[in-house]
Length: 219
Image 1 (cartoon, rainbow, N blue to C red):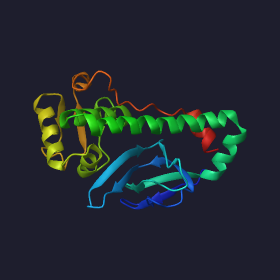
Image 2: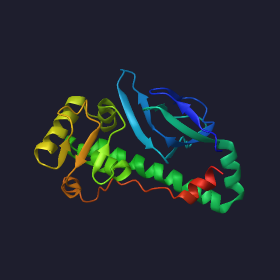
Image 3: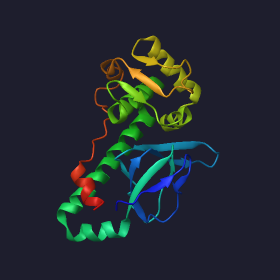
Image 4: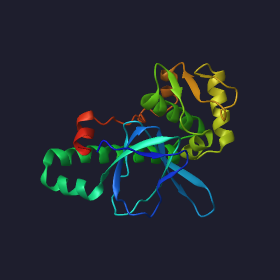
């Protein structure tokens, strides 16, 4: 399980409809899951960063495609081996359940984000998510393209750029480039003000998976 598999920028890990043979963990880099509609529009389902696990499916085939956002290294474990071990090992089964639970919580949050929030609220929620997951002392290095972020939020690129500019003018956010399309690093000056923009019941914080669970799954 120490072996890693490398993927170049935009290279597919798997496609929608492929047999779900493996579960994956991001070692370095980042991955997005996506689905294209019949009219060509794209929906980003989730982003995965170093340490995250993805590819758990309720069925035998993948419902989303997965691509590397940048040069990425992954570990993988066979789905059938995990399912077999889950049937006979209670603690192992609990670990798999916690990973699946995390995916369900994220899917529920994303459904609320797309179905009930305004453009300003969606952008605020996205920035809080990124700060929680990959932010360091308020510095958020975005790994994805600006268009990826827009497709994740179900908004146009112009709308997201406008919302980012508005937050910058309010002093909540600092852009290191004038254009959201060209920036890679954002400085979050007030997470509290971003949270205040969201409905009180919405936290959009995805729980982390403990190292013990990860070691169990990929041992």
